[in-house]
Length: 402
Image 1 (tube, one colour):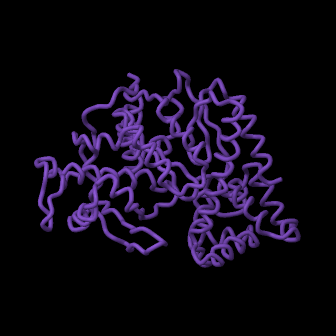
Image 2 (image 1 turned 180 degrees about the vertical axis):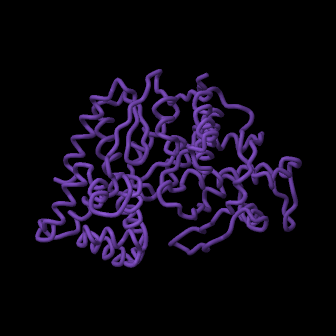
Image 3 (image 1 turned 60 degrees about the horizontal axis):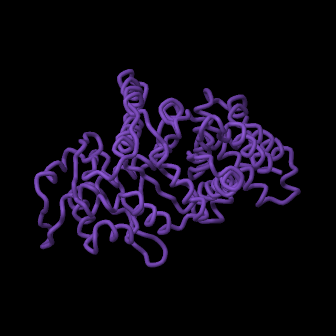
C-alpha cells in the first residue's frame, strides 16, 4: 500500500518510552506548583527521540549531545518551556551537559539511552500541537528561524519537494523487520528506520537545517535500499547520485584553499588529491595499511578527520605513515581553531556549497520541474531525469579540485 498525503488529521502518532506511559493517563500534571500538559511532555520527548536517532552518526558511535533553541521551545511549549525541560531532567530522560551562554550557545543536553530500549506508539490530540506540526507552520517556522548557510529559496524548494515523496510503507516495514529477524541490522539503525517509516506513514515530515549546511529529514536516515526500492516521486522510481569518498574529497578542497602552491605540488599532496578525485582513497588505505576492507578504511579515515588525533592511536599512526603532510594539515587546522570539531564543520560547509549552491541551484534554474531530496552528499530524484542530473552533478564535481 502506498500512503499519500491527506488532509490534516485530528491526532498525531508519537513515540514514548515505556517508563513515561503514565503521561497518557492524564491530561495535566502538577510540577513545582505549575500545571503541565502531558501531551506537551509526550511531544517534547518524541522530538528528542527523533533528534537522537536522526542525528546519530552511523560511522562513529559517538554519544549524541544536542542543542535546543529556546525560541523554538517557546513557540511549541509556551513561556513555561523551562518547566517542561526541567521535568524531563528530574525524571531522568535527559541530562543538562552545558548551560546557556548569552550570544554564544544554547543549552546542550544528552539523552538517557536506557529510555530508548522499550518504546510505544501513542496518540495525542492536542489541536495546538497538531497545528504547529502542519506543513504550513513548519515551513514558516523552521525555514526562517535558523542560521543555515543555504539560501532561503533553495531551502523552500527542497522542503516543498519532501511532501511529494511517496512511501510503500508495508513493503519497507517488511524489509527492515526481516533484517532485524536475521540480525543484519543493529538495534539503533532498526529504530531510526522504523521511526522514520512510521512518521512518513502518519504524514509527519521532519526537516531540520543545521548551521553547517546540512539538511536532516525523515529520508536522510533511511537505508539506501529503502530509498531505492520503496520510495517514489510522481509515480517514478528513484535514482541516487553521490560523491565517492566525499569527506576525504572535501578535505582535498579545503587543503587547496588553505595551502600554498609550493605545498600543493608536493608529490604526497598531488597523490592524495588524485586519489580522492577518482574516489580511490579507501582502496589506497587498504593497500598501504593493516585494515580489512572498505568499511574499516572508511572508519579509519573518519577517526582521523573527526577525532582528536592522539598520535598514539592506531588509526592516526597508520594514516600518518601514508600521508604525513595531510595528517599534519588536519592536526594543525583543528589546533588553529581550538576545537577538533571545526574540521568536520568546515567539510560539511563545503559539501553544502557543492550540493545546494551549485548542483541544486543549477537544477532549479534550468529544470525546475525536477523534484528531489538530499541525503547529505547525495541527491535522489526520479529515474527519468538521471541523464540531466548526472551531467550537472559531474560538471561541478570536476570543478571541485580545479
